Amino acid sequence: MKNSLKEKPFTCKLLIFMHILLGIGAVFGGVVLVIDPSGGLLKMPITILENSPFNNFLIPGIILLAILGIIPLITSYALITKRYWKAADSLNIFTEMHWSWAYSFYIGFALIIWITVECYFVKQIILIHVVYIFIGLIIQALSVLPSVQKYYRVR
Image (cartoon, rainbow, N blue to C red; front, side):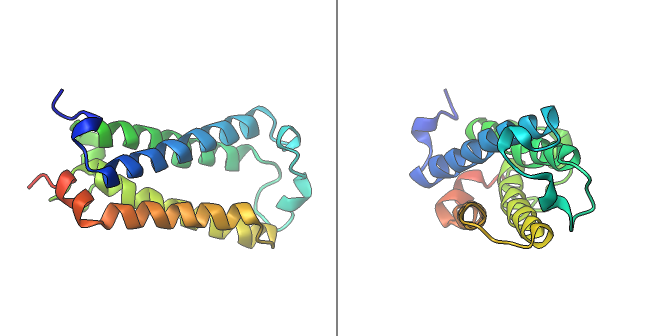
């Protein structure tokens, strides 16, 4: 198998793991918020949304599910296989790199922005926010490592 995990540098494997970890957590959280937009299943009081544009957790749940759940899981698959996908590649501004590398970088930014906006709306910062900001920074740092860039360079 040409693009097996065995052939990848450890840094690429770690990047893939970070996307899978993020994706699984966000799919779980997003699905639960879509199922119960009141936040009750996650023991999140609806009152934390008082300073946000949302009346319940439905829209945040959909965004969480799609942007930080499904996209990182698709990206992790593409980081493993290096499959070409024209639609995804059309949003790749780093033309010398495989689209999954670019999306990895985008996801790091998206996670940091998501957590920052969340902290702004809920008017507090708790440990889980710090952890996820750190995960976003790790994803970005891993993405720009020379060994990772070399592996995902296409031109």
